[in-house]
Amino acid sequence: MTPVRQRRVLFTNLIVESLSMAWQSIQVNKLRAVLTLFGLSIGIFSIVAVFTAVDALERGIRQNVASLGSDVLYIQKWPWSFESDYQWWEYVKRPVPTYSDYEAISKKITSAEMVAFSVSSVRTVKYGKKVYEQGGIWANTYDFIYLRSFEIEKGRYFSPAEYQSGKNICLLGADVAQKLFDKEDALDQHIVIDGKKIKVVGVLKKEGAGLVGGSLDNLVLLPMTFARNVFDIRSDNLNPFIMVKAREDVPLDQLREELRSFLRKRHGLKPGQKDDFSINQSSMIIAGINQIFKVIHIAGWIIGGFSLLVGGFGIANIMFVSVKERTNQIGIQKALGAKNIFILLEFLFEGVILALCGGLVGILLVFVLVQVAQVALDFPLMFTLANASFGLLVATLVGIVSALWPAYTAARLNPVEAINTTF
Image (cartoon, rainbow, N blue to C red):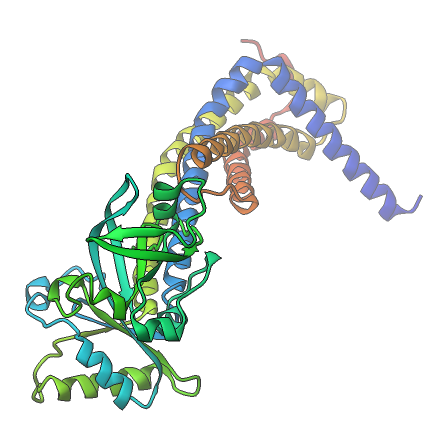
């Protein structure tokens, strides 16, 4: 056997024997081991649970924001802002975007590929004796389908001819269809809104709760040309806004500046006057939520950090007790030729095993919590391998740090003094 191979075999045997001794020590003191890992389990549970919840929130928000379109600008009265000094008293004085603004932008803005106008209202939706209270009505011009991402589970979108003629048709959000029709097929049935019969031509795929708003699940989509028969689409109370999509060869900033100049001129604003409108885009929300989630991640570390600290001290304390109890054994091992590194690894592995067991318990608790939440709540929680691996890594590091000094103390014991030590 070559010297290199011999050293590898010796090193492997050292690791295996150290692990074996560490495991035997834990089995001898099972109750103490369980009590020791309890604190660390809570710490790992806290960190992994917070990160799992944050991942679900972040994933849901980003999916929700993605449906707004990265190349679409939203002209609205209110800005999408996460600033602490949100000047609502100034914004409330602004006029709302109008249908005539939409028509003017459609004709004049050369950088725009598509433009859509939207208004929304709350109305009672009926089907036979069934009633959907406080249903949202979202009326849009035809190009809405190209500007706002959504999937149609059954049926279709309204055609250009139907839009032009003001046909009494609609698409139902998943929750509205479920409430009114249950297992019955909603297609080609007629709902009633404010006494107007409206034919259902499509049912939208369920999106889930919109974490930043805008979910279509509880809405009824109407063509704007028919919606004018249901309510006054020019009313300031309908939260009107205009969506503008840039041409492929036009940067979004260029479209924004063209829109801003056009609207300032159209609204008669003089140089130095503030804009009386907001031009929003999805990246504004993403920038804001990035800041929010940085704070949440820090909070997660603080919440779990205290439990990890307690768990780490618990492991260190038990390891010192274990070193004291096994002082005679350590002396005998050294007298028989055990090297310092063997003693060091034995106690180090014992601390890591304790920490990993605590980490596994904490991760198992998170897994169970996620399964229960998925069944009981309409919330997109997901247990990921990445979070589980991160939890085990943190547990391993805590185990190493906590056991390092006790293990070093054990490795430095004098064999003669250790053998003769009495308690």
